[in-house]
Length: 133
Image (cartoon, rainbow, N blue to C red; front, side, top):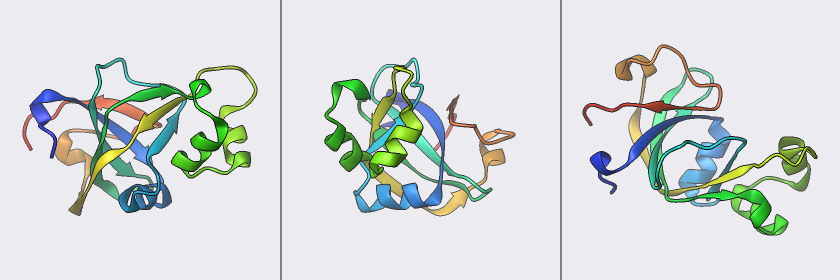
């Protein structure tokens, strides 16, 4: 279990199907077009889209520039098809980041955003300040 005081906390919006793949250990890389300007590791709270709430968290020990990984490895670790990867990354040459996923923990009950003083879910991710656990 990670120590909250030692890592920065990020809130990430995620579809339920991807969260379920993280829980089973199948999805160990989350693809994002941006990455936090924080030291590694960081704690990532997972908000399930559709108003479900914060379902759990994972530890992101490292963020990897996707261009530095073999395409087959990217797809396998992120659970994305070749078509999904292409649609997400495009041809523009922009950097896409792979956030590593480890130490996944699901909460017994989802936590509403307002319990953390958050008014709306992030479009992708946002920084959050946790005062108590």
